[in-house]
Image (cartoon, rainbow, N blue to C red; front, side, top):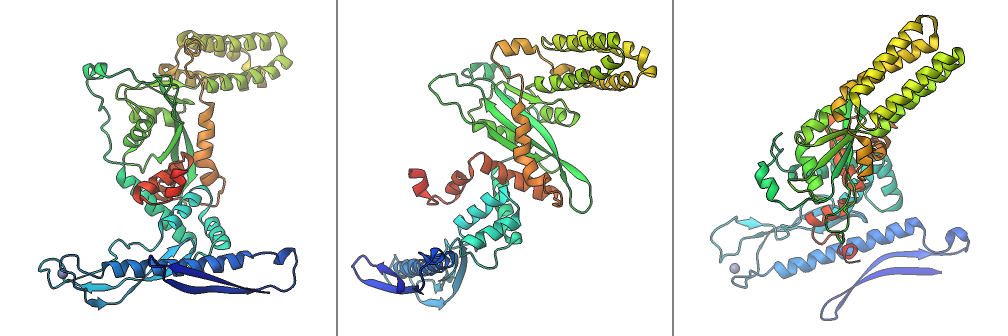
Length: 464
Ligand SMILES: [Zn+2]
């Protein structure tokens, strides 16, 4: 049995133009020969693409051939072609150069009528490369595209990376200037603004990425911005959005976060609460990102550290029951002091605990270990004393006290793509640019971005 696949172009006047795309023969029928193979599909798609694209160009050039001012035909200066990589393979289309019409006296002497034709890759292929390159390694993207689509052989991890970075660089160019560190309007102006929506919480965390050229590791910051509620109840609450950047590379982190929060409806007088695990690195980031914000340490991280200490008291209890029980009780009381934000009392309690442990640590390995843990905890609380609120009060008012979601953000934004694959080494720029497209993908914003750049890109998808 034979099949012939043909594309027919039908003009407005009904005239037809045909093009054979492929013939296929089927002999023995089996599971694997029923219908089209992937290879058949790729051949058909590439054949149809080639014909449709060249016919579109021919038609467009025909329509442009007549000078709109005087009705004369433009004279050809040079024929030429342009090769464009598309999701259905490379297409080579005519791209001539014509002479300026004799009725014109100014401007260039020759011009290309297809002036809109620029770049070597179609937006849809750029989109696919960027989307998947943001999620999985570049080599995998190239392999996958080549396996399922008739993309050209020249597609490889280098081209995927280049294309993704070009998209990211364009996103960066559009970001605008960095905002000054203290740029909030004066208080009176702020007071005149309508009440903002519910507090915005920005959970922030740091992660490490292995640097190229044996330069050790560098830090990336990732976070997620969440709007608790809308002042007007009928307004939908915007979805959370994540962001990421390489601190030592990014020239405009404040603008980045600012734009993100604005896209979620932030006003100038918005109350912004930063939350983190209280680690040294991220504490500084909060201050420079949004100076007039409140910084809250994540309750979850406090309890987690206390739980670890509590577990260590168990071996002390096993060794010397009364001492162990007393220490365990003290550790528990530190938690009860921190919940309502009694930092100074909690620190007193920690100091007492250390003194108690000092008395026995010389003769007890568990006490020795515990003393170290308690000292570390004391330093941690001391460093973060400004960021420990009355958690109980916040909790009763329905405010966020924990950002367990931040942990998942750093994993989502950073780890899977950067860290897990330990043999990958990143440059600051490469990591930073990837974070930009990656967060666009995770925030579900990449398609809309492409539509802004290419207004007819996937218009059906928007209509649906
Ligand atoms: Zn003319």
